[in-house]
Length: 209
Image (cartoon, rainbow, N blue to C red; front, side, top):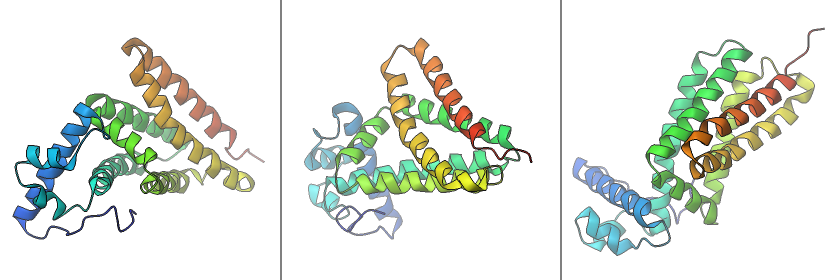
């Protein structure tokens, strides 16, 4: 969770207040996508959101709080997709297919909304916010391991968790690489990483006695 300097100063309770917060977040995300996080100023967010800057500070103490809130919304969206994909998994092949679908969603979602990538860059660059990304990765690992533990060799479970953490962290870099290259290469890059994941998963599977 974000610390006290990176959360909403005043959580909205009424419909109009929630609408105002949404307007601020939409404006901030648009500016981030156009200019990058570092170039965006609070007064620009206020102007695009259609109100005085005081109305922004009423809810957000600083830009980091806006970034953290946007990240939390993205993280919730990703978590919902992961839970949905993992819900019907009954065997290892199903788990591999679910992870493949999650990676495809991750890539396609960021490709369709480049501001998300700027947001992720900002989270990793801001010392006050970096722990949010680590905590979210740990949540993803917990979700994966809760499903995969059935098939993982008990003696290697701790090692599996470490590998899973690395896989989730590296996925961000893989998607960045896929987005940076030619569109024709993106599919091959994602397929290569899916094979890496599949190989690791199968390596940790409990062997028959």
